[in-house]
Image (tube, rainbow, N blue to C red; front, side, top):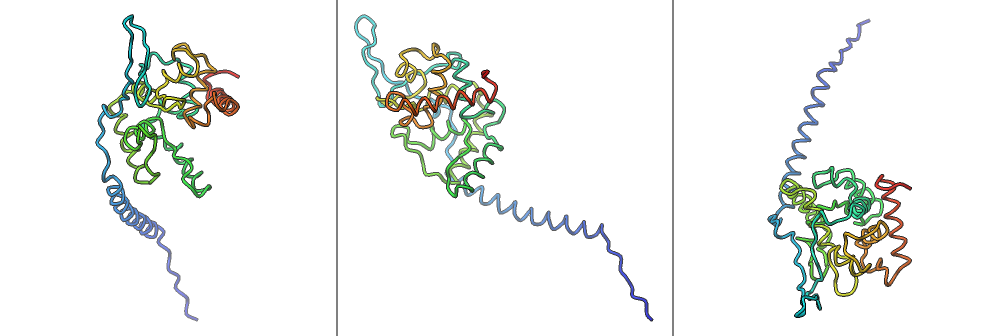
Length: 256
């Protein structure tokens, strides 16, 4: 009987072929990805720091130097980072962007989690935006006067990320926080913007005088300024404030 010849499998050769195939697929996919990415970046705004600044409303004083009116489409008084209470910074970090001082403008873990939630919900429910990305969105992709944002599209999100990464190379975290907190919409009558005017409107005091509970309520309001207005919906506003406080405990900013 003739003996059957058994060929030895060259494992090294198979492994080499497999690696080459992966590289080829990766190169093809990478090239296609770059083409798509370049197309998405078309029309991206040029980043200018002046575009991120928020205009203050006009103050009118009487002959004795007393302010008698605050005029403008948006009522705002800007403050510096050093005027922001630590509790307010902690509250915003807890509810909006807990890794703000660690990431470079884009939080991969947060974004991935949000995308998985969107897939599960079969809709664009969450954006996974950092505070830097929110600042970019409010400055370039939102009608600041009307408070209407651009449609939620992948192209816009890609441009937000690119601009946020660019901004964090040029500007400090403290400056970004300052720009962000001065630009935010806090609802209320008279189109109140920025945390200083919000503090005066809701609590009758300057932002530097806010206590922990007040800081938590203001940080919670910005998510839905009308729905969480404590003058109109105190129960909703209080529940939201409690959520912020619980998040502050979870992230270690305050004790139970």
